[in-house]
Image (cartoon, rainbow, N blue to C red; front, side, top):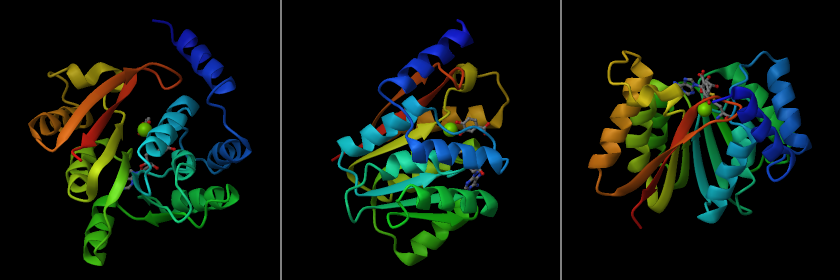
Length: 222
Ligand code: SAH
Ligand code: DHB
Ligand code: MG
């Protein structure tokens, strides 16, 4: 278990198959310059999100947690012309930084970033009669991951894919004695998934530039 090796492998992957282009590099730089935390998905993870969304032919994508728009750009690039990505971000200032980077990436027409706590935005979306999504990426406040999942389950099309980031967090997922509320929420997510007949799910733990963590993949029955 050597973090330097994990990072070197992520760098290798990033220099070969999953490289950031100019717009992605610019998005990371703009976020850092504006003082945003550097917690975006890694390039291999961003590429994975892109490939997953493309594999299912996603036309409508919902994202929880925009930060500086790095994962947003990877995901929006999977959309066909006329597709749509809605990304929810609690902080106004982060949303502003993200919008500029998304615009610079030429994706302004496909992407809407809505500022405000996601649970409140979900109520507004409900009132607006929002159309169902076919790909959801949950990556905001971890304690609400099960709530975002439950809402998403009722607002996706059959065959949709829901991905949740940061569910393993250094192994706290499997530590029943941990009183970390975020970890507890990830265990609740897994209980929910196991009991939900409309869903087939798995969780993959990962190592890399983001340490030991992992993501959950849930396919909604078609
Ligand atoms: N998906 C991004 C990283 C998101 S980091 C990427 O990989 O590029 C988590 C983000 O969720 C932060 O920007 C944080 O401000 C936001 N967030 C935290 N609580 C939130 C909430 N209640 N509603 C919406 N966004 C929230
Ligand atoms: C944090 C959030 C993330 O989405 C992530 O991938 C890593 C860390 C955080 O809030 O610390
Ligand atoms: Mg994350």
